[in-house]
Image (cartoon, rainbow over all chains, first blue to last red; front, top):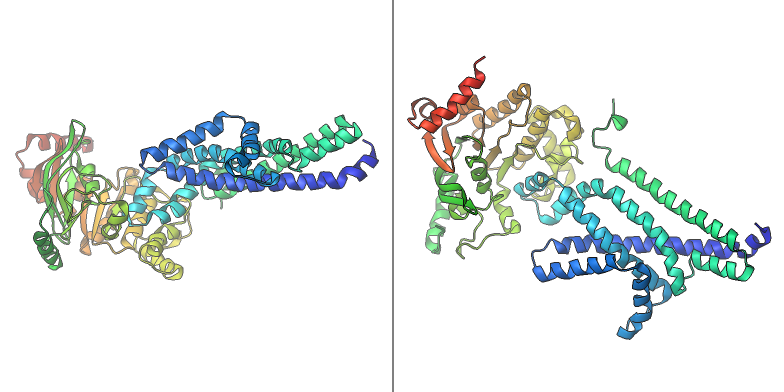
Length: 224
Length: 276
C-alpha cells in the first residue's frame, strides 16, 4: 500500500474506527436495555401488550436493517422525528438489536430453574429483589454466549450506517476509495479492522463467561 | 368456603394471638387440574410446636397440599389459615386471589425446604443464608452475614460458609437450605420430601437437623418417605391417598392399628424394600 495514502487518510480512518466503536457500543447498550425491558413487559399477563411486543419483535427481525434505518432516518421527519445521522444510526442499531436481545433474554429467563424462584418467593422476597439477585445472574450465565454472538453480529451491521452518512469506518473508507481509486487496499484494510473488532468482542465474551461461571464445578477451574 | 363477614375474621385474628390456637387450619380444601382432582375436601389442623408428617404414594397429593399452605400452589375450594390469617385469598373480597407481593407478609413467617434444595448456585452458602435477611428482614450486610454464620454453625456447616453449592454434597446443600429458612425465624416450616434427592448415606445428617428443630419446638409439616422419621418424630401422621386423607392420627395408630387397606398396602412396600 502507498504509505502516502496512510499519512493522508490515516487520521480520518482512525476517527471512523472510533465512530464505529461508539455507534456499536451505544447501540448495544440501547439494544440490551430495551431488549430486557421488552422481555419483562412480555411476561405481564395483558394480552394486547403481549401482541404489540410480539409484533414489534417479528417486524424488526423480519425486515432488513438497511430498510429500518432508511425508514427511521428518511421517514422519521414525516412524523416529526428529525434525527442527526449518528443519532439515528445508534438508535436504529439499538432498536434492531433489541428484538434479538429480547428473544435471548426470554430463553434465559425460562432457563432459570423454577425452584430457585420458588425458594425466594417462599422466603418473602420482593419481585424486584428476586429479579436482580436470583433471576438475572442465572440468566446471564446461560445467555452470555448468545448475547456476545449477537453483539459480534452488530459490529458488522455498523457498516450499514454509512448509507445514511454516519462518518464511521465504512464511510471514511468509501471516501478514501473514491478519491484515490485504491479500492483493493481499502477493502482489505477494512476487513482487517472489523475482524479485529469481532475478535476483541469474542475474547471479552469468553473472559466474561469464565468469570460468570466460576462458581460452577468445572474441572478446569476447580480449586484445591 | 371463604369467610365473607369481617366479624368472624377479626375473631379469628384475636384467636391467633392465643397460644393454644392452631398454627395451621385446613378446611374443605380441594384442587383440580381440569377433571383430575388432586385434592378432595381436605381437613387438617396443625397445632403449635407439632410435627405432622404427610405420607402416601406418589401422586396422592401430599406435595400439592404442602405447597398450598404457602400458596406456591393455588387451591380452588375451601380455606387454609395460618395463625388465623387466610392464605392466598382476600379476607374482605371473597375469592380474590392475592398477588405474590401481598403474600410476602405471610410467607416471611413460613419457611419451606424443597426436595431439590433450590439454593442459588451463584451465591456461597453464607450468601444464600444472608440474602433474605437483607431483603426481607432489613438487616445490614454485616449483621446478616454474622447471623448467617451462626445459622450455618447450627446445622454443622460453619466451615463451609464460603463454598458454592456446587462444591457441597447433597446433604450439605440441604442443610444450607434449612439454615436459610431458620435464619428467618419462621413460625412454621414446610418440608417437601427433604431427603428424597439424597444418597442414602446422606439422609441421616438432614434428618438429625430436622429432629433437633422438632425438639426445639418448631412447628413442622413434613412430606416424607422416611417412615422411621414419621414414626419416631411426628406427633401425628396423615396418610394421603388419591387426594384424600385416608388415615390420620398418632404414628403408632396410623402405622399399626389403621384398618385402611390402601395404607396397609402402602406400608407393605416399605417392609418389602427394607427386608434383605
